[in-house]
Length: 326
Ligand code: GDP
Image 1 (cartoon, rainbow, N blue to C red):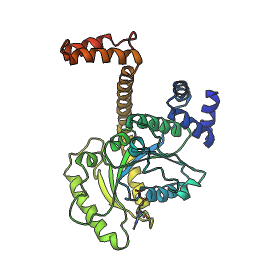
Image 2: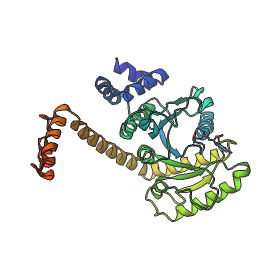
Image 3: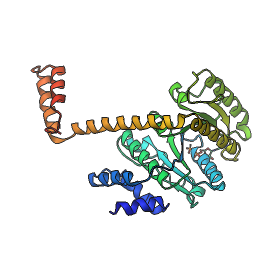
Image 4: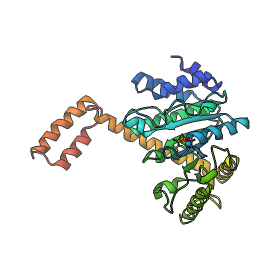
């Protein structure tokens, strides 16, 4: 494969080149990995898209919102890419986000690019692929990259670690509970967006929004936020209400962070995070090498028979785990 040509095609905004590039970074074949690394190195890094993370449980209205929000942005002359991280696709092969009928209108737009979640066995693998796909979309000149995930566990952290602005999408709550949203996830949110603020659901949406605004005020103020953030607001993705207000808030926040140095600082911290993740994965992968596996099994037997002390055996093994084993 001609990597330079592929890189040029991506930079020229050719959708097929971008799709092929993403397929390449999604592949786990060793030769593809090498080509993917070369491709990432060959791409220019000057263009920065606004990376927006969006998390919400199934049914809260993510696809409806992305469709109407994306169409609005395209109407303003922006180019929008949509990527997804779906932890369910790693566990079971069945995907919550992969449904082909989602985002029909947006999918037909030339200024939009939609890519479903890559499937893999580990969230870490999916995360790496999506993060590299984000880089490819930036090189392809997209103005906004939306990274969507299902709010069921660790995937929010992963998405927050690759976003400039993180949105948490909620539905109106029936009662007085805060929908069991974990504190850690609330702490990641820059804007809590309460969807379905329309028709009969509007009063409940107002209450939910006020509840979350109150809860956000109790959180410790973060350095990277101007006054008033994080905040809660209401939208109706279905009736397309509140979307331009949400976009204005995102831009206000992103602009402030750029002006005050937090944009670059956050991206630098994220680069560090992904570097550390990659080191950990590479080390764990060494354990999977046949020689290492065999040595590990042998030592493990000795430990089980009481012939070796677990701690000492482990330290000896790690000391040995250099190129001769891996
Ligand atoms: P996702 O699973 O988070 O992607 O949610 P969907 O976008 O598929 O929406 C789930 C359901 O909620 C669908 O029946 C939508 O029509 C509905 N829905 C989404 N947004 C709104 C909204 O703003 N108002 C109302 N009333 N329903 C909505």
